[in-house]
Image (cartoon, rainbow, N blue to C red; front, side):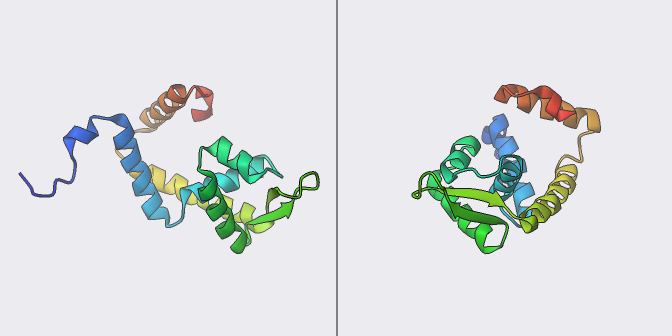
Length: 144
């Protein structure tokens, strides 16, 4: 038995571990944070959100959201402005550069996903996606 097993079967029997490994492989190949991408996608869909709203919706710790927004703002992808109704809060908006970055990262994620799931045919990929959406209680048609 190898001293450093590569694929611990005791963990691989859990779907969450196997999917986590796939997520980590995609993240490593893209070279940027998938969470940053999630924030950009979310802000493109819903503009002028608070950091708290982003944290709650994406299930990311508030302090992590602050760190992510700091980096996205520094890169010119997000603008943080004071909320006119509550000066203690910030409203977040995606910039034109942020939209372009989101599109580039979408393409990278699609390419990486195709490589990571290369052993699955198209029907199997859609089935996996539908099952993941079903487990989350989301609309399964999003997989089509």
